Length: 417
Image 1 (tube, helix red, strand yellow):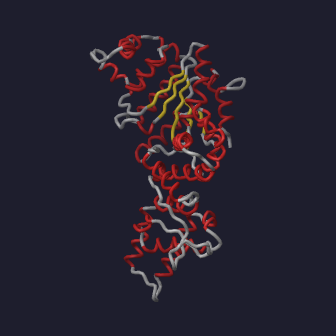
Image 2: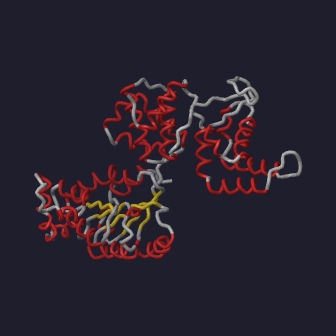
């Protein structure tokens, strides 16, 4: 598996890096990978800064265009030319933020002041300038991102046709940043048909958890305050097995705020990291829960213990009972639940259904059986989240109840006083 260091070296470093070689002009390159893996962050922090410096020496441009909210190919074309020709960072920033049409429409507004007014006044000049074309021809680079956020008004066939034409006629390189599963339905079929004709080179972006975390951590100086806790935060993230750049940023931001207002230790870090992950991904915060005896419903130290969350009150009876029984089944201690995979849980529930669906005192009705099957089909993600974060990772009792409730409230509300 190629790691991010090797990918960076291949793209912009070494003797004849791919993105700086004129042999690769006219090519369309796709950087794909799973949602949240940090493709945009990798491009903007690891690739683009060095690439812009090297291309500037050749009087060429490196342009980044987000397709978010774009409603026409014309607006995309204008943004590319303005960014390529502009030597004023403000103008490129304003075009990215507000769009071509927005700047044009407010050009004569009395509310415009200072630099924004200057940027708007410069718009027509850059539209007519050939400077952008010159900086893109024969070696410039255009990167398109946020395909999944483009307006439906832009036809996917037309968009890829434009991209292909752009690379060929301008003799530049075009980079497409794309989630591997971004298209659905009709667009999925269109994409399959056009990518073979449009894309010349594929790169699959799949960093390790360590690589992505290090990239996020080192991209902002403020996180250096967490240096003594860095390994503990990473270890907790590795427990979740989540690969998600935005999630890591939220985790680090929460840890930083807690560090500034509270005392962090291994236990509080684990609870904070895992609780943040659970809330961001699953919109869920568990109540404080420790193993209880099934008969006395009191805190126990015996081997026969189970966990039950209030959330399961809304689950079918068989699933609630199965969660308790499988907890008891892991008879040594709660930590053995981490070894029980989700598919094993489903298999156990299936066995419970078959057992209770036989003749005898434990019969269940056909209607209840069908209800459970329907619920499993419709709520797979809910059950997966509950099983992974509530049972396998079981972080809620790492600290005392008061501390846990404070962390949970902070994660949910965003407020830590």
